[in-house]
Image (cartoon, rainbow, N blue to C red; front, side):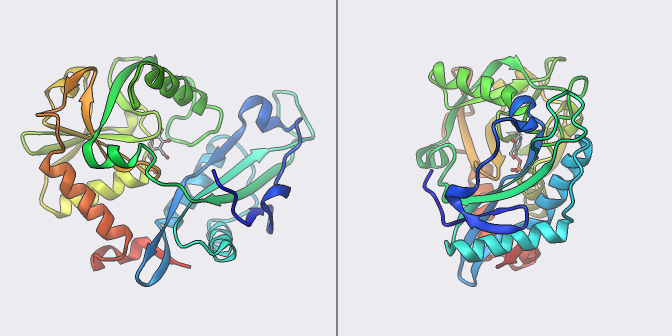
Length: 304
Ligand SMILES: Cc1ncc(COP(=O)(O)O)c(C=O)c1O
């Protein structure tokens, strides 16, 4: 990761190197924080943040779910993100807002711990590799189960629950795969370690429901909308492991991963092992939308 000039920290733009936290911060010890990932795209009309308010609304919702008192409104956070992008002067970046508990208490009752809010930004290319975007990646079903509704708040982006994703990702990489696919405790397929999953079979598109434990991904919502508008039948459903093996096409969606085809799951080719037509069309539409080339979706872009 290459440093950028500024980080927005509790209301001020401060130099990158000065954006530090105390080692006795509650969030460091217990994972008591919530975060977002947002992309800023370089468009012919200048830098545009993709679905900024939707991301900040999800951040506020995550903070509420984890009972973290956040003093900034969605509007404040959107303004902070825009200020940061302008100050750093880079046309296309990844934004990482985080709200976490600081010092003041290290009991499990966090009352008394301060609350900090920061937004960092840096240039982040294709999360699963440029070749992955072009040719597809290899995924495996993880031995780790996705944290579920019975243990945490899987629809929120809580920092602590990402240890689950880290374990799954490390296992996949160690085994020679690019990404993990996590099942829930009932054995249904939920999502990747940091991406939502889509399958295509006989021209019908499906994605696991959020009730299974999947994050209500903003890219997922974007692709459901785009594919439906394109005339595809798109359903949110229960996805079994067998569905993975019978799919004609599979792809991941996420702010970091954007639309990344999956060419192999558990050492079985997905379809013919190439990138299928629905996935390719999804990639094309997504690219057109984030770069401002599709007018009906211009409201998703927030120019800075
Ligand atoms: C576990 C998980 N699922 C799905 C996603 C995709 O969500 P989004 O498209 O909002 O980035 C992410 C990334 O934020 C994630 O961490």
